[in-house]
Length: 319
Ligand code: SF4
Image (cartoon, rainbow, N blue to C red):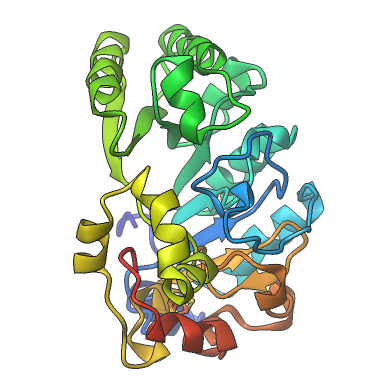
């Protein structure tokens, strides 16, 4: 906040409390990270994603968030003075399938002062790159796992690497043309089989003037980890084709209680129709909680969900 611009009227007795709430919020001490699933559909079937089906987890909910729900979500954070540190436009779905993406990013940017607006995409589809570049989005992370179709499609099933690279080039040229500030990063999945292609991807990023980020991969989603622990022998063969299971086991840990989970303290995860998930790591529809609109936002970290009880007893490497 620019302190010189912050001149409360002397008759406004609540300004001090509101300002203190905003900056020293004991429920979201570093600000909330808000994950909004603007598209519950995906155009790919990545095998390391729970949607790939290895554990047969169930989530048949599909659909696009409409603009009115999106605006209501953003406005609720403003109305309740909850500071948003980061807004993630995507969880398990592909955000660019929602044609309202630029409008949503623009609205969030205009209403959530100081929030970083971030999207995660496989970039197999892209609307007008100029519209994305001028939407106010701060950062786009493109998920990739290879530079050749053969390697890329081992995980990114149904994707086309040439389309992804062409779409990155479209965004890079829109950025130059519009002098856009949006950061573009390739989030390259670090699998056991794609080290040589990671080197090529890094070089591609350097030449394109974009960021390269090597992402550690793990058994994804809470329910996927629980299923893996239950039938380790059955699934070890599958996972060892992608990740170093010994390393994964070394860093996986359990927690004493859900209260020990940091993610629970700072994350609000909202599905396309306004229903709540306990966090972005939960996948199955049976673990949905109530509506985001039925709670004060500061109540949300305290809501108990049985999936947290399962999660804390399960060794997980990313939590
Ligand atoms: S499901 Fe697990 S990671 Fe998510 S909030 Fe609960 S304890 Fe934390």
